[in-house]
Length: 141
Image (cartoon, rainbow, N blue to C red):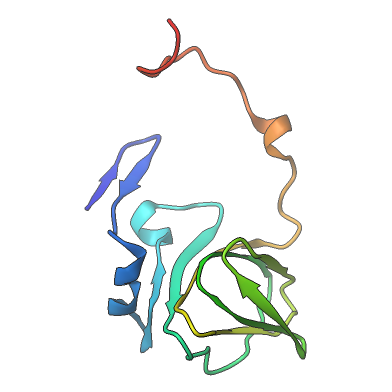
């Protein structure tokens, strides 16, 4: 289910445990949400590698850096020949030219991957945010 308006998009894909039922070009456990949500500034994928399985190849990018947010499980991450353990709460940024891959450990590995063009961030939230006048139901009136 997707709900879109001019100022927001809303989807519910269900439990992340269902990710292993999804298929992206022959890869189980990967869902790119950019088109469905109408993202215009980044690409985001939700991912699950089944316990003991790994990406079948290392890859790099031409322009995009990636941020991997490990949301569950454990595993091993690989960047430019260096392998290191990851688990829930691990955050891994990889520059476009970094050759990367990952493998699930003894538990399914759940992660979110955010891609954006390297060097494109021109301001952080503190400089870009604007306080609004709107009030949600839980805010003091």
